[in-house]
Image (cartoon, rainbow, N blue to C red; front, side):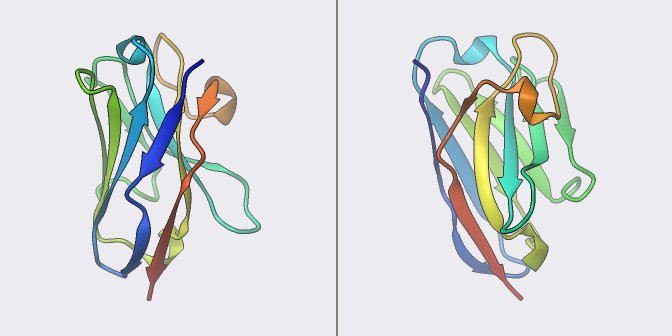
Length: 124
């Protein structure tokens, strides 16, 4: 069983930065792409960013490109999301998820294991 545990969320002001972490269990972290999604109240879960197994390929939603950076440390089995220049519309619960073994995906259906989520609230 794979477990994913997010941390690093909180309440910040617009323009501030946060770094989310996702610690994973198991010895297969480096064999899969990973991704970040978010869900705001009353809205569907949406793609934020994804990263390939090696970290060499990344993909971002248009709404966060240039402000957010996804990265991973395969030696520590940990995924990160650096969020800069935060906006009120970034407020949501952020989830990390395990993606496919080949390529990277933007659809939630491409991800099989999910964390419990961490709340990010940005006040304007």
